[in-house]
Length: 219
Image 1: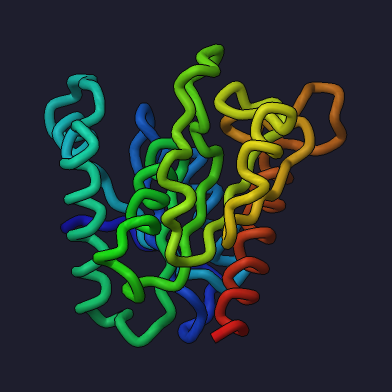
Image 2 (image 1 turned 90 degrees about the vertical axis):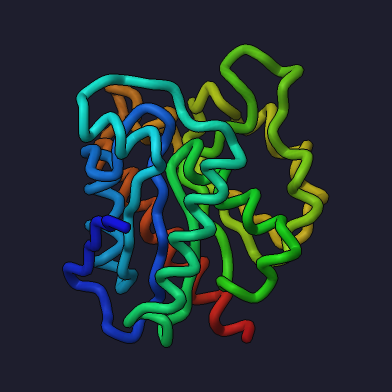
């Protein structure tokens, strides 16, 4: 397993977050790097990895579609097991990801076999539905969450905007939503906003750190 570790200003006793990439960009994309660095400043150590199809792209440079869901989940579950057996095993563990990676984390958070293996899940830019396809919602597993789950979403995200999402997920216990004003799927704000993408990513990291602290205090 090759992971991309970001510690920076993170605490040696703080939480560890396994952070999975989205469908189209690798673990070291600018968004993933900025998010990991912002999380490190909040005391969170991140571990980034790549799904098999993205690892193959890195080797041969050829773009290919994501692996099927079972293979993605198998890879994520294996990475989680390796982290739990490694030098960070004594630290509180969370899982999460960007877009597709966050969706895979949420599916693991709804898998009863894995109950207790990690403390919570965090999704950055969750793909609630494909853009413009309101008949294809990806929330059927939400009622099965066995751990607290956070979704940080831009208010302009075509994969799920507040007016579409809020009422649909309001009844799911253990799910917390944080909205980034003006952000799109990559947390890029409107040009007229005073905030930059970097600002919104820092807001996302702050929300994530607060969520993890709250979860750990509940134990």
